[in-house]
Image (cartoon, rainbow, N blue to C red; front, side, top):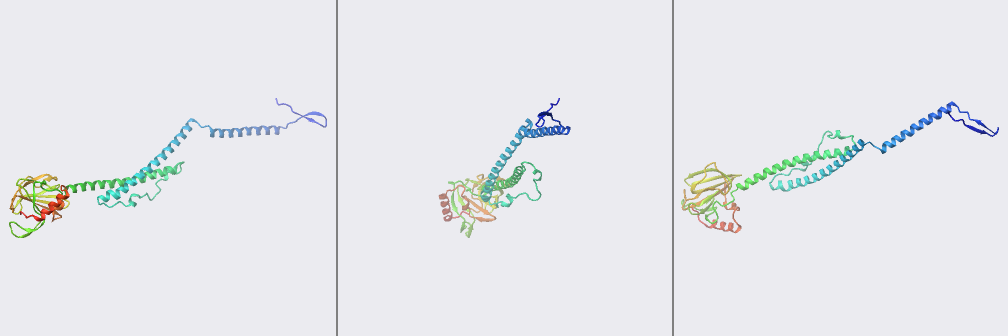
Length: 320
């Protein structure tokens, strides 16, 4: 039951009953109701900002963890890009230079991605900028790695070819040191049998009959025959424009088409054909032209030994 309220009337010096209108009563109740609703709404908003559910907290932690890992990946991508740049520099300035290959242009290595927006689907998220940057770095790094990988494949092929070429060049003596004496070098001289002044296209190594003769480089036997001039003679094709001739042999131990390695036995010293004494007539040809064999003995001669060999080759007499 509602309490009755009074007020003091100074004119009558008595208490009078306060009459409350129904409209004021209902207005008061309505204001109170809305006030309670407003306080409840403000309290709910503030409470929801302070207190989150366990699943929401887990999602927040996961988002923070993903952001941390994205930043870590971004840092590692920058480090990988720096390492790749150093490799690209060595590739152009050292590897490709050594094997006489043209450097890869910077425009080709650093080429980006033009045309349509490749990363449109990554826009509109809270961390879109970070995700787009990482994705773009991955794409660029992947493209540069493909270019570098192809370059290294080419370098490996060039190195293999260089290795084969170095093994094929006739760079060693055809007879072991100490087993021969140089009778004649690459020069004009009087032929000992024909008695005519003739250019001697190779070197003559005098040695006892039966002294072993070895291939001076890797190659393939393309002739192993007997001729009226060279007697028993072996021809080796070393590829890369190099060929060698081993003449006046007493015996051949290789056949046409056979592949040989530097240092393999191919025959023995003799005096067959136009020869006045047991010796090996040895020639080196480059692109079809006879060249001085003495320029190819760097494989097993010291500086002093080379000087002695050069001197004796200029002073000695031909045996064929």
